[in-house]
Length: 370
Image (tube, rainbow, N blue to C red):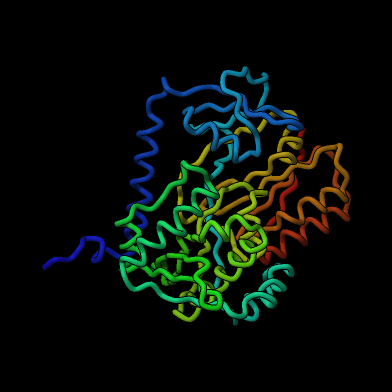
């Protein structure tokens, strides 16, 4: 009987096996400590230098997660923060990526009401005339890979973008999941491919890849419209297929990153169920508030996602409210405010309302910081 092994193993078991295998591969890749380096991560206006300790190949990722630039061979300042590939005492575990998930346990009107006002207005104005068409054959999968998926990945992430292998894409599109073309008034303007799995009694649809032709991705307004409508159509399809959750896919775990902000505005709750890798950040004794003001970070603890923010002496309560209102994510377990000065009652009220309302009860912890 010709049955692939993956077809008889439940998806949640395959996910656990993949996560374990990834951990083993990461440990093996990190093992040759003699290949590690010590480099300085900094940027114009950054108040505190960060010392990176790890493989040269991951230096760019480390700098990107903190919004800094890597300077190989530069001598880090004494007393600086340390970002390491190895666990450090008293450090924060900083994930490489997170997923953003929308629960489908409410009427669609309530789900859409959780989108940002700009997103709701865009959908009301633009979504008429769009529809999804399922892909049924391998030739179309291959054509869309060459015309949409791979060009879009290169446009977003450069020539080093990680692409799905043709066989893996075909398997996901035609067997393990599904692939759809986004059609606007008879013209194919995008496509996406994803898969479903069940864990703890909940069915989740994961939107794994999105693509569009260069003519769409090179036009910022057009790209904004097509991307937003395509996501909404995928959400509607997942709800129609009776999934409990719609996963918009992975994004860099940097709070002010454009992609994670895009998913925040569409009601995505942060989720760490798909571990990719992590660094460990040991904050400095002095300048902690300044560093976290410039480079806020997500951290993993007990399976949940925490957010660490800074409040320097030089920043007003009003400015802090303006800045951090844009970082009110759903799905946070706790929000830590490392404050270098006393916080006024108005700031605390506004701060807690922003983050508590983001997930119906996120706990805010204020920590005195040097």
